[in-house]
Length: 258
Image 1 (cartoon, rainbow, N blue to C red):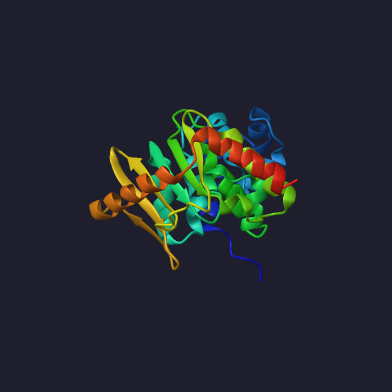
Image 2 (image 1 turned 90 degrees about the horizontal axis):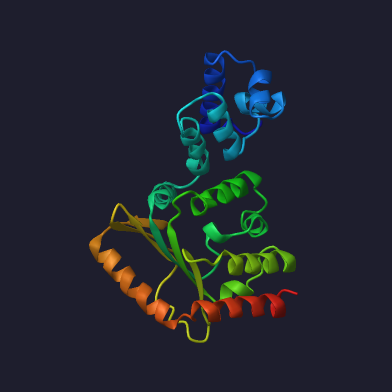
């Protein structure tokens, strides 16, 4: 037996079909407006294939729907198969105006290349696409500030092979901007005070996602946030400067992944 249809994808497909009919358009007419093939519209309306978020937004515009009328349904696809705590965090992540992230084991999802994500996700293309589309918060009109600190070990841990790692490190270096920083803690000085965590600022308050050996935890407890902010400041004090970190990443790419 095949896998059961995704409830979120089924709901999105029905909404596209219903709104197209309400607009008095055939599949071919809607396709020509976007433009795309009528087979693409048919696949989206039957749920046979998951459309891209860009396609869903284009359909919204072509049908004269309000912004996010369909995209909100589409976003349910990203979190449908995730455990509850990760769903809760993705909601907060999308609303955050700033994010402070510390990682010990892997490049954080918001900064992963497609090749790197594919290696982590064992080739699950639906999950890879969802992760890539999650990164759209960094390219929207009002992206959050992202401050990331990575343990050096991440740069040496093979995920996807030599070329994938080289591309991933190049992507890290090229992602740096006024609103996005990536700093490295050399392994020989890392205090290792904590596991991975992210602190987000949402509506002026702090909420955090903390990884444990068993599950992720989303918390807004004052005591938890105070502790994490203390750890964050200590961790950053061990990190190389932004310029030093860029040089470190580039040297590692050339020396380790060539």
